[in-house]
Length: 463
Image (cartoon, rainbow, N blue to C red; front, side, top):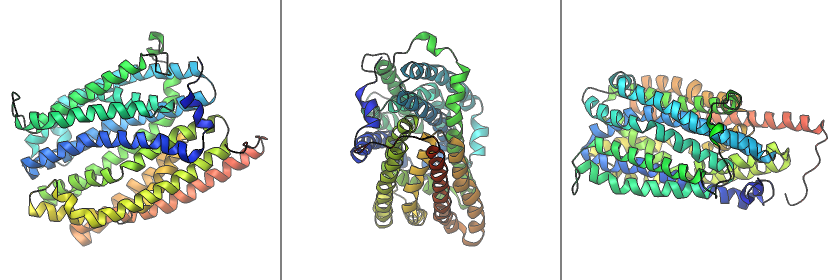
């Protein structure tokens, strides 16, 4: 089987336009995926602060799902892009087959945790008695979507690893539109539907995830797919699974750390009441929405790094990293300005309570003070992942989200109360930026010196 043109483009097309071509669909896809979360929050906010807080304490469970699914997908994407770069289509097909096995097993395990350990999980995540029942309803229902959610996320990365960014975009847009339509009907009981409250938001999420998994199943088995997956490839192959998680496990741990940080936030905010937890839930979603272009850009950079690293075209790879870093810094700088100036009207979309609005607005402004430094960190961590250096990426993420952030939250909350909890994030971002810049420079110098000794030919002009 010959490689499709969009896969070959990873090693030949001009980098600036290629990065934009791969990033824009990723941005739209992430926006579409964020849209269902934002729409849930918008409609659930009409039920009051306890309902928002309920979604906030369930969010770590969903983030753990995302960590496992997307982290596994990153391992898949990194591996298949390197295999395509090495012209090994057969190996890429074997990797694709493992997605079916992994999504089934991981999904059933996560489903069992959400159904049989609901209340203990919620208490661990910071639930208060005044909204524990609402959180229980939401978690119990949303847990049943775990197998479909895993297959959706891993297939997304599988397709992106081949250089095809358009198909994931179309699937994400379609499922998000479905969620936008279903949410108010299921939450408020419009038309023939029963009024389900937060349970309706959870059910709408399951429906869209099932639809997304179905779309990917149809695509991967069709002629347009670059993969030809046989049943024999779905049998667990521990060598390939090891290769997937050699890169993917550090990615999973990085995102699990993000879930743990949200749990710490909820626990630190718990003494300040339901309003504080609800405000964090709102500001986190709002900031993530403004950060959407960065996530899309990192998805665009990943196959460029993986393909050219696999093809030993290091000059082109580092040129792509430089362009992505510049673009990302411009985006995060713009996002920071917008969040500082538009915090109140944006927060007002989700809040009818004056107290919740004031707390959320102030939190957004302080939380995003150093956002301009985050874009470069995303690109550099993506570079390490694309090169298969998952351990390095993990260490950097631990420094940013645990070693720096959690102690700062504890220290600042003692002296500055709620304001200190918000302020810990920008200080952590600045410290992490400095460490990450030094780390990526060291990796580049080390790899460059190794390749010079191997007599790698220079990259042709125009690459």
